[in-house]
Length: 102
Image 1: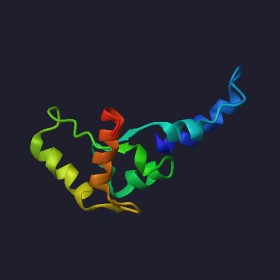
Image 2 (image 1 turned 180 degrees about the vertical axis):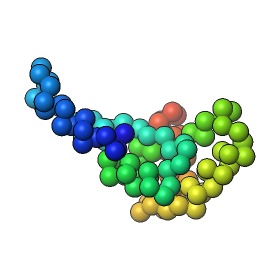
Image 3 (image 1 turned 120 degrees about the vertical axis):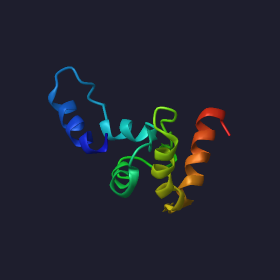
Image 4 (image 1 turned 120 degrees about the horizontal axis):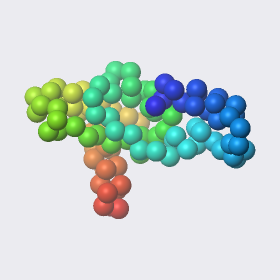
């Protein structure tokens, strides 16, 4: 989504009958994003240019993605850090807050 955000925002102003108060960037920043796949080294930075770390989650796509691949893809996130600390802890807290309200 981050790589097409500017295109979506531009078309929002070109199309007819668009709410003049529409703010594509604001609305995209409110969404929650799944970091399954290959978020590092580039995708995470692109997503954080659009939203905050509080809107990030990790879903492994298991069982559709084999367990050994899930482990390989999750490993870089286990050592990554953000301004608020280890990202793995932040992702866990975000998901608990989203689904359980805590």
